[in-house]
Amino acid sequence: MEYNRILLKISGEALLGDQQFGIAPEPVKMISNEIKKARDLGAQIAVVVGGGNIFRGMKNSAKLGMDQASGDYVGMLATVMNAITLQSALTQIDVPCRVQSAIAMNQIAEPYIRHRAIRHLEKGRVVIFAAGTGNPFFTTDTAAALRASEINAQAMLMAKNGVDGVYTDDPNTNPNAKKLDIMHYDDIIKNGLKVMDTSACALCQQNNIPIIVFDFKQENGISNILTGKKLGTYIN
Image (cartoon, rainbow, N blue to C red; front, side):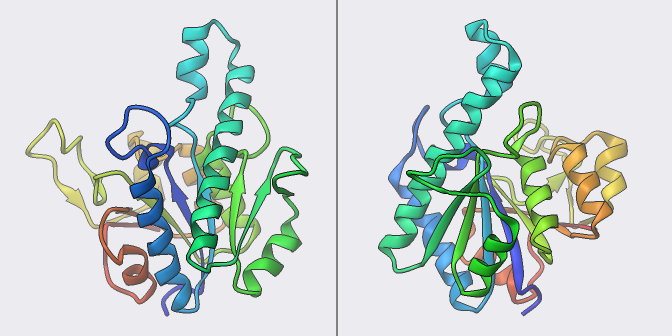
C-alpha cells in the first residue's frame, strides 16, 4: 500500500445528502462502506468530520447575535453528533470504532489521548476525532491537520462534496476552470485557494504530510488512493 495510516477529513455538508439540514442516512452508509473497504486493505484510518450540516460557527453565530467563541463551541458539539452517527454506522457493518472528543463527554466518547488513539489504530480500530481542537477560532481543517500530525499519519485525505480536486477557479461557476493534478503547499497559501485553511496547509507542510483532495462520492476512492492510484489533486 502507498499509505498505511491516513487521516480522512469529511465535511459536515457531505452528510446532508439532498437535505438542507441534518444527517441523511444514504451518505453516512456510503462513507462507512468506503471506510470499511479501506480498512479491509489493512490501512489504519482516523477520521475528522465537520459540523456544517448542523451548525456553522462563524456564519450561524453572527445571525443569532452570538459571539464567535460561543458559536464555535456549538459547532464543535455538532461534530460530536456527526461522529457518533458515523460510529454507529461503522459498528453496524462490523468495523470497530472509537470516538475521541477534544471536549470531555465521558458518557458518549473517550477523551482525546494521543497514545490511546495510536493504540486503537494499531489494533485495527477506526478512530473518529470529534469537537475539533477543543478551542474556538480553529476550524475542523486545522483540527484534521493537527491530529494527522499527532498520530504520524502518512497522508491526509480531504473528501470534498462533488468536487474531484483543486481547480484554478470554481468549476461550478466557471466552465474554463482547470483541474490541478499536483500542487505545492505554497500554492495554496500564496494564492489563498479556498480548498482548506491556510493554517491547516501550513501545519501539513511543517510535518511533511501530503494532502490529497478528492470527491468522496467516487466509488472506491479511498481504497484507490491507498493502493497508489492517482485521484484528485496531490499537494506536497
